[in-house]
Image (cartoon, rainbow, N blue to C red; front, side, top):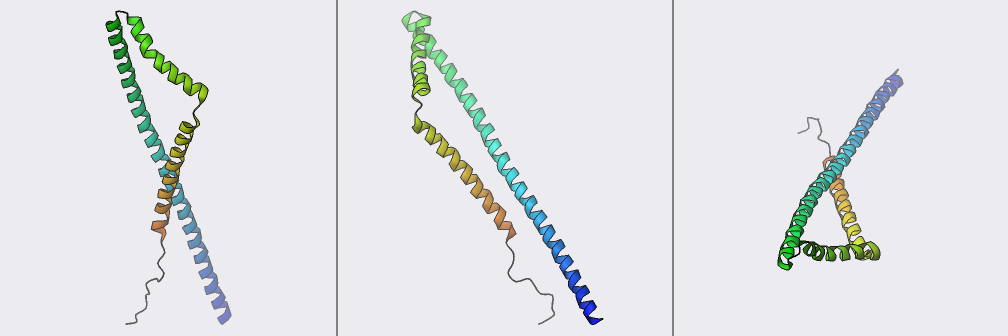
Length: 145
C-alpha cells in the first residue's frame, strides 16, 4: 500500500509538472506572438509616418518647381519656356536613374532597410528574454530560522 501511495503522489506531481509546463509554453508562445505583433505594428506606424512625410515633401517640391517655372517664365517673357527649363533637369536625372540604374543607391537603400529590420528584431529579442528570467533559488516555505 505504501508503494501505491508513492506512485500516486509521483503521478500527481508529474501531472502538475506537465500542466505547468504546458501553461508555460502557451504563455511563451503568446508572448512571442505579442512581440511579433508589436514589431509589425511599429514598422507599419513608421512606414505610414514616413509615407506622409514623403507625400508632404513631394507636394512642397512640386509647388516650389511650379513657382520656379512661373518666375523663370516671367523673366524670359515666355511661360512655356520657364516650364521647359524647370522640367529638363528633372527629365535628365530621371532618365539617368531609369537607364543607368545606379547600384550604389540601390545597395544603400537595401542596407538601410536591412539595418532597421535587424535593429527591430534585436530590440524585440531583448524584450522577450528579459521578463522571463527564472530565479535560481526559489524562496523556501520552511520555518527554519
